[in-house]
Image (cartoon, rainbow, N blue to C red):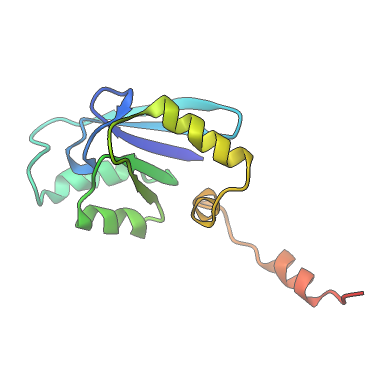
Length: 139
């Protein structure tokens, strides 16, 4: 699963989504995590209401299931959720490595419903197996 992190230093989730200078994208499994891409942004990133700024950020995370941010505006959050990406707000700066470790621990166990849904991003939903299970006679 691909996960994005809004960061200023590429080590910590410490950036507002719209104002972030970098978005680091990792491919994370229960056993492994590797940096796939770093997208860098320039210009006046603190300018509110700039849809161009948001478009570039949204494009950078389009294949991700989750994005970790220090903060995110309402309009951006709505657009992220509409893309079926789960935004996670980190209340205080936190190490990307620590977040990855925690996420991998959850993935090795029983992920909560929101995470199971995020894991399904990009996969075709197939209800045939579910229907067959429901239609099978119970002994």
